[in-house]
Image 1: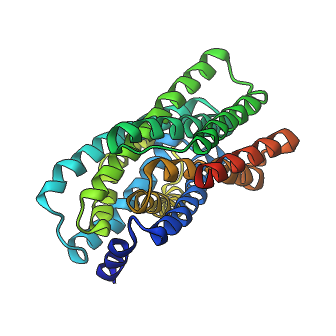
Image 2: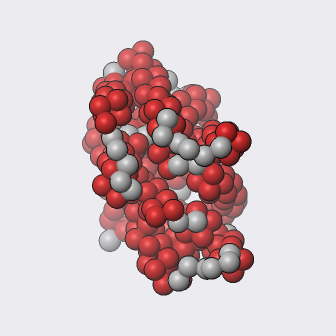
Length: 304
């Protein structure tokens, strides 16, 4: 089945069908990533512990598939996979540090607001991708509206200034790492003969670090939470992560990296909806208006 899917990817990449599917996959990734982020922060979960509970499922699910179902990756991809492990591990460490210090509705928009602008700039230098004037306007509107959403959400934050500055600092660094891993992942999956072999081994590498960090953290807290509910939550979140990262990487192979990255950042709209439904966070007219502007920016990026 996966060989047939890979043949389908090879047949549509770079043409109009590929462009349409890249749009769909980027939006699927946006919704899945927002759900993934909300589960990490839901009920004030320790981000260091919950991240390990997610990543262990990557290893449990992906490793048997990688060994027994998918072809062995080409040797040329091994150093690329090692680089992915290092880049994504840095991203996850920074994100966990940001979540540990700040509210989800502040940290998440800052991370996602910096990502698309930095990505399109890097895509120009790495892939020689260029955008039309209307698309640049869409990127500017998208990023500015996301950052404005973070500023609005800051009004409800009651933590101390020192903690808040630390959270925002880690969020900015995480946003830069989002751009770095997006470009690197796109480069890697475009080199792979079989996109799905590349993806499954990517998820294997994702599960190598944080389960150990999470276990040590869990052992060190005064009243460690029950492991079974945490692992069940991690399983649910990992399913969203498979959908999110798999979809966006396929989208960057099928079409423009910058466009896929920008469309994925509509995840903040989904995040606001999930925050309202599950984290009991209010939306209000200002946030609603900013989400409309974010959606408009995404439309301009795609059709500008």
